[in-house]
Image (cartoon, rainbow, N blue to C red):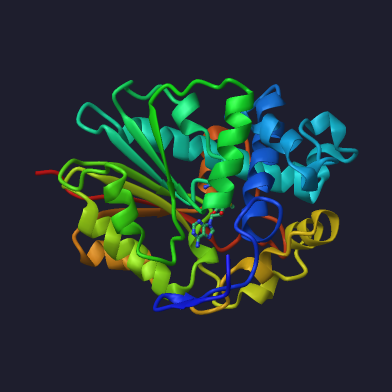
Length: 305
Ligand SMILES: C[S@@+](CC[C@H](N)C(=O)[O-])C[C@H]1O[C@@H](n2cnc3c(N)ncnc32)[C@H](O)[C@@H]1O
């Protein structure tokens, strides 16, 4: 990708594959899901996650089982942070399955990365899962899944587009039907986007959704992201696997997307991850200087007809 500027924010330079930049974060989450999968008390299982990690050069020495991590659960990166991603996967799995009830036949994964919900979840076979991410990430994903002869349970439509561009046209051209209700996820995505792109995303989801649709997304509430720059999670991720999350997050002030959706008539509920740790009995717990402290999971529903 070349450096360009759009109306929705200045482009960062860099590749659009999984080898570096924001694309590499998709592999971080895949490695976390691989570890979660092999736990005896796993919150979510994803048998494909390990294949992605094994197929990508930058993570040749990353663990895929907690037994390969010397400090186990006490490790800030592959213990606590990976468990966070396991919890997030489980909670959003439950949200998608619950929301994709009798009437919903389309799911949109914004910033899909290496998400394999189309292969894992018990979705109706006539359900279509649209996977929106940048071309390089989706190409890597296709290659690994084809090599593993993985068969999706629902119809899967990759939509290669940059979410800082006019992705609504790409999604509808790929077959998404704005007149029918859908389930949308923006998991681990919004804080990488410029504020204008996040506002466009929320406006677009609202514009393209029929009554009865649902959206879940992750947000960070901190006014100053750098407040946690010395936290164990950010430090370990930066120093041990070279992913500087704070360098990848957009530094500008964030829009109030939950408030914006509520103003558009959506019902919204906001939770901390720790709410689900308590509910499910597993997952990260609060700690001092906690980079997860400001993380919020928002669940929104557009009232039905
Ligand atoms: C942390 S990963 C999360 C992936 C996936 N949602 C999951 O939880 O496994 C962030 C994803 O957002 C994608 N992403 C970030 N900025 C993007 C952009 N401007 N356009 C499209 N995708 C983007 C990255 O390529 C990456 O796959």
